[in-house]
Image (cartoon, rainbow, N blue to C red; front, side, top):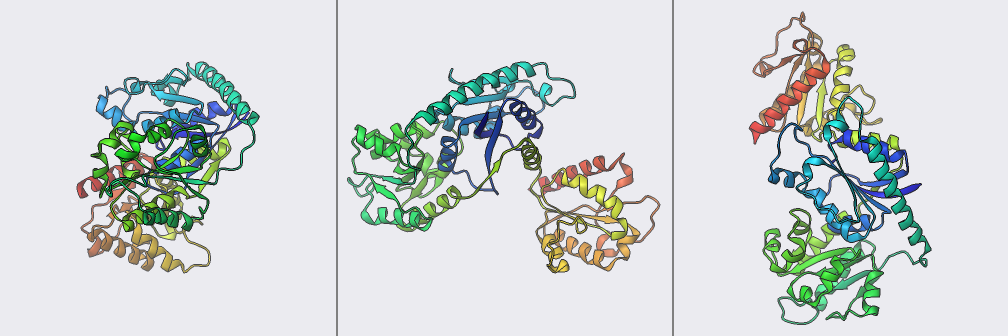
Length: 465
């Protein structure tokens, strides 16, 4: 069985993600899309992705120590994005399956139609076997049967044209403070036209919720709707909220995100989830702001996604997604390459971007290598010079180290020198003498050394505020 799922998960829990995905792969080929790059939360984008999926699968671990009793506020804070996506999924009418950390039991409340199963994080990530594996497999097997039935029902329906029309549903009458003029609606269309959305339908106002009106709305890709008092009292926003029709939400007369949260009309539908909605609602009070905010939403709404279609791709994605995003610059002499390559390998298990001039990846072929080295150094958050007599004698290494010290003095980089060899004797240059450095030979192995470097980096970040 092949299915396309929307996967709701915590990026930085690769062991739980891989355990779950491997289990799923035994019974079905689960493919899913992931966002490329870092973008603000776009609720309309999430709604479209969930609507266009065959299934919704949630994998919800809690990142804290399993031996610690967590408070309800901590549990709610850790699960806020899970609850946003689950809220969207429940209203999408997509078949749902949720594996959740048993510590969340007091946070989540699932409708009966949802397949849900709690797990003990120590069982999932521990070195021993998984006593509950057979139960997990049976639940997923039953879920697959539901998805299969849902997909069959969708296939049996008349083939519809690809959703390509956008709707505009805003108050076109009433007091000026809530009314959208022709210029306002033209501005909305202008921004959509910029992104290639030319099929736009203007819905009459006030809405008449008869069959023809609702049928037209249900066929849209998404609908631009105001969520102010007038629109809310018409009933159309509440109707759309309970249907799988993505909305791009506007609120006229509001200048800020905090202003959106203070609106009574906002709270009845969107106030129950702490993240997502209030930062994504387009609050505006003039045409320039309306166009600017819409442009930002459409930029993220139309951003490309990457399809993960095999377990091997999933493993690579989950491992990479768990890595830290701060860029690292590793500086060393080519004569110390053997030990440096081990250090580089361990850093790459912890960070997404590690500059290593000899790894065959960090320097772009055909580019000026010296120019590229200093460009990468200028944006790095952590600099690690591997200090040895070879390093001290190298002119290139000296230039890199001096630039790292300069970046550190400007508050732009944490620099943690690492001495490589215990018996190596050399005099540190004066400009480097006031930096505390570590000795690799003080630790049992390279992984232990890198763990200490990460700990020292985190401590430096915390002090910097």
